[in-house]
Length: 319
Image (cartoon, rainbow, N blue to C red; front, side):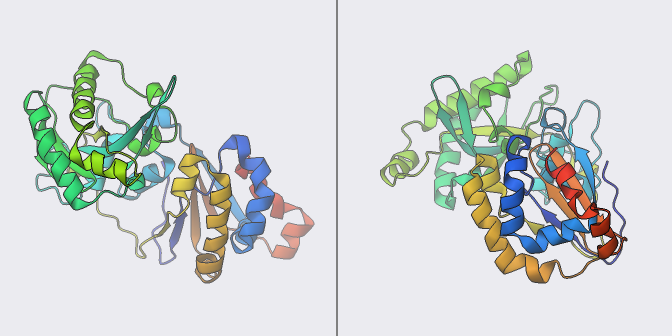
């Protein structure tokens, strides 16, 4: 659990800033050159590493931080990803009703693997989503699941109360191969059957025919996650709301490190210089399986340089 001291200083959360361990050492120098303001702050700060295995949490470290920020408490066999249902749907009326979400997606089939693009990657219009929602009603009518509410990127669904399903964030799925994440238990097979039926229904749908003509990724699949109730989350109590910087997420998820460096340089130019001026603000940095909380160092800069402490950030950056 990540403890938070609730004071007037601000948390600055930069998601997707920590590269995958296989490339982190190689990118360290380039990243420090692209964003000198950020890395000067790291040089005189203390970093506390939290290793967060997506196989256990079911979500990304950034999503884990968001859930911790709302003091989410998993119940029973739930993992943290179960809390993404109410987190992404904060206006659910019944606080004791489990919130399950279906997120529209693109599933790309390769020779031996399938990959997933999330709704964030697809730029879905309201009219496209509504047309697909109406066609999905037919598929859902023949299943134990029920469509409840339409949203542009995510729809509310009802899962049978006696059905126990695992929850996995689509953002985690999109970071790897879909084959590696599909649950294989008997109850999940019903969900797989439903999602396969949706793929068939949408294969020649007019929405996708039009998207194909415009050379845009098809909305040809979906992913279901959630299961926690709104009562398991609490209202955030920080005096100063955190500042969330999510611009690096897409390139980090795609492991497009050239684009990642370009976005990092733009953040340096547009955001970091004024934002990081307050030396007492805390940084929260996230990657694929790690979260690092960076707190201001109390050691004078000259002494840190003398003891070579200004290079300590590389120890956790390259883990």
